[in-house]
Image (tube, rainbow, N blue to C red):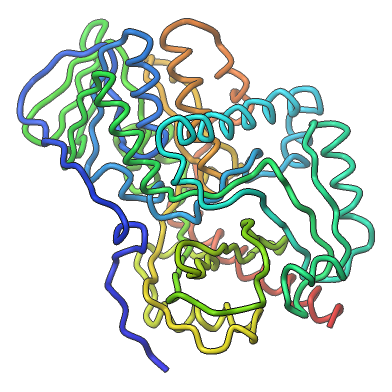
Length: 425
């Protein structure tokens, strides 16, 4: 049955009150100009300002209006590439150092929210479940993470897993007690308030159209004005490829989708933890306020929402939990992420001196905090820990051809997932 939903509005937007920030209408000077008002830009601006650097932030729309305010709200350590992929690229010791930076990002988010608005934390823990029978790999992974990365993951058998997730689709699982889940848009708005309280000048509806170097400074033109600053930091995502071409053209737009149900009376999801599966193209979900179910999944490189999105997401829910009954989808929306082809964040400084912190798709809440802090520390010359991301420098993502490749790989991943699940049925 086709359902009518509120177009383009997320449940997050429906449950917050926004403050308005003025558009840029003048020419101003600053120490730092941050371009992009998502999590990475907001943390960068806040941390630069706290270090005594007068900072201006330019956002083309509203703060946290993109993927930052539309994602699943999971906060856990690590990267989209996964520790095995990171180790394969840089070796075990460097991977351990990078993982610790990601853990620092997790704790940054926790600390900010706990200190200022603890109600934004909706629950603690994250359970990651298999949708095919295990051959010992999941337990071995949990043991490796404990021994090599100091991350305690609790292994659960299929029987124990199904006590919490009442679905024949699931088998073994692992639980991270250090993870938690939040209201991401409210977190972004909190960062904006903290930044302005610290002295950051935020300008919404001020899309940056050019950035050029003049002498020892950079001039960023946006809306009806411009910002002249000694440092510029690009924190925009995949839909602005030309403003800073080294990072912008190293990203691909990848969309994922989220739906929120009405308040449910159900007994199939018996945990307040966030939940995900280990499929290559998996589902992720959690219970939120009033017993609503927030469900995310699907991947595509299209930038528009598919027709009948609510019905598609409802079908995904019921394929895993037929015992949910007949939930109603009250909200359904897309979130467009920026992915680098190596699936790691782009954090660094180019030959001209422009900074960038972007491409956090797939594992962004902790890594945006990490990236913002690293860049602020780099600008303030406190340390050069940001150089740990040099092995993951920007690489051209092949434009439209790259988008076609990503879509094709997603379809291939879906086929592999179905094959593995069919063998376990």
